[in-house]
Length: 109
Image (cartoon, rainbow, N blue to C red):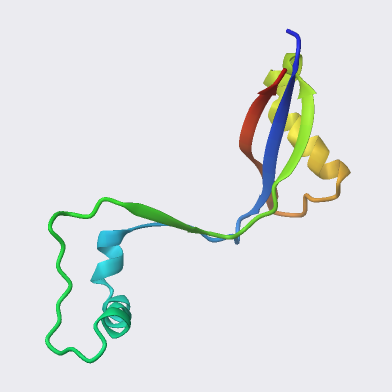
């Protein structure tokens, strides 16, 4: 195969935050509801937050990580994870209890 692949990865640690919450869960929290009311209904009394339907939207709380990139030949596609680990080791990014997580893979012509 001709061409290259740009690989983007990040270094992840077991202690990093990675939590997915739904809006339904968020609105069940009394502290969150109180803050919403105080911010958007200041001065009003007997206010309740209601939704028309079940909220399925989700959002993610995660530790912000720097993304690192490198370029390899398309022929090396099967070895991308190993090559990302080697790149991280060369840049002295890997530490104890950390690992590489692939973020994106792009074909470059």
